Image 1 (spheres, rainbow, N blue to C red):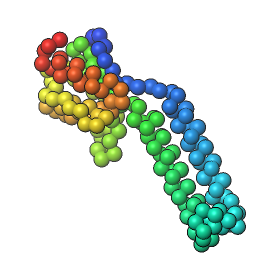
Image 2 (image 1 turned 90 degrees about the horizontal axis):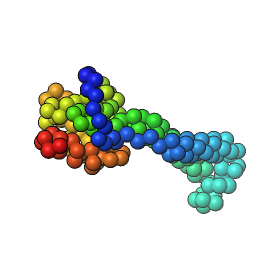
Image 3 (image 1 turned 180 degrees about the vertical axis):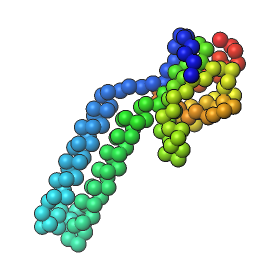
Length: 163
């Protein structure tokens, strides 16, 4: 990687500590509620099942569903708050740099640092919340939560040499 010094035009990097804090508090609340429901005595679970479903034989259903929901919610909070926020794209006057998105299918490409000059970029596209930067030697998928459209327009304009 070269260390080209140039002016930052636009960045998709997002650091929102409030959302992380709320997510962690929510995760702790959901886990505490799940532990509370799972550790309830059997007769209370049967009473709850009778009130909710009209049947005491389904007393296992509510704690099981709560356990699944809490695992899903907490996993989602961890992935979105900590791992997804690491991916970004920074558009400079003479280069594009950043970190690729978390990729479960191709783990060797996940969270990879890159720096590419505009003449090396073949194409750039938007796919949902991702920017895909195509070069002759690699494709960089960047999770761009903010300024995605601006970064896409700026990269395309600089690829064509308009700026």
